[in-house]
Amino acid sequence: MSVAERVRDESIALAPAPATMARPWSSAAELAIVIPVLNERDNIAPLVERLTDALAGIRWEAIFVDDDSPDGTADTVRALARFQSNIRCVQRLGRRGLASACVEGILSSAAPYVAVMDGDLQHDETLLPQMLARIKAERLDVVVASRYTDAGSVGQWQRSRVVISDVAGRLSRLVVKADLTDPMSGFFMVERSAFAAAMRSLTGQGFKILLDLFASSPRPLVFAEVPLTFRRRLHGESKLDTLVAWEYLMLVLQKLVGPAVPVRFLLFSLIGALGVGTHLLTLWFGTHLLAIAFPVAQAIATLVAMTGNFLLNNLFTYRDRRLRGRRLVTGLISFYAVCGAGGAANVGVASYVAGGHHSWWLAGLAGAAVSVVWNYAMSSIFTWSGSPAPAAKPQTAARAALPAAN
Image 1 (spheres, rainbow, N blue to C red):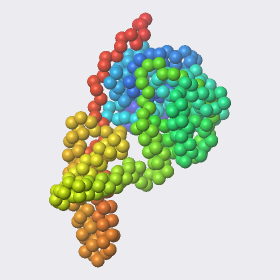
Image 2: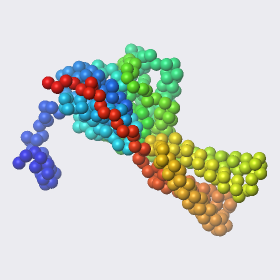
Image 3: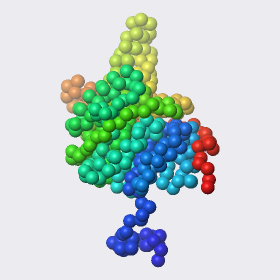
């Protein structure tokens, strides 16, 4: 009976594996390198070549996790994989984010050790053999490539980026107690069981999976650091922007408040409170400066507040599900409908509580609480359902990126 037939046979698959099947295959990867990428087509072939040189004598595989890049990054990886069997591509459709890409890449491999590194050639791949040797010899959970050890360097960063990194590092101390010199590093190696112990507590948000890993682990992680000198990017553009910084703040906040209160709900509520202020300001402007009749001014103020809330939530609260183009319009309409129903629920609950001879402020709070929970839950289902707008049609991978066939 073939191995495939054994796996298909449920009774045999559940039984202990025969000794002949328990022996590891010589080609099994000892080290997996997970590389999240977005629009990095021109960096793929040089990176694979550098990894091949640096990891000579080590059984390794590289897993490129691509968030459906419109520049054809995934096609380039697959083209290389036809010539080099230890190169793999995980192309994600309808999902975004570096941290979640790293998690999916790690889970797609069976290697006992996993490294995470960027796909823009700024991380020094020659450190990987040293990191692997240390994590095995010293029985470590994690080895971090740090820019802030004595021999490390941020390279030719602009002063503004150095300041941003320093502030982010200080914020990380709120949730990570380990004495890491570079908790913001995107280049590290982790032992699989250490990752498995923390993976169900990971938020998967933002760009800093290392911080998430240390903050989510059920026990203190045993780690070491190696010095990293950050390189300059050769091709493509940096993904760092103000909204990436916002996602980082949300990660820190989520770890501070814990899983009981989703940080997305906190943001939704905060924007809702801002909407109350917008409503009152618009109402005052309409009734006092424009002399509009109160019912008309109230209707306009309500519309302005709901529209503002929708745009802010689309930009910040649901950044990973952001609506664009036609979906922005249909999403706004569905948000109006959800908030309209929430307003009706607000009035109904408040009236019921007030009818029970409770204080007016208690009735008002009860109605508002029901309204915000309703609006959050229903808008998550109907307005921001979880699938971002489709990416642009990928370009055809450049033939120049392919190695010559033997």
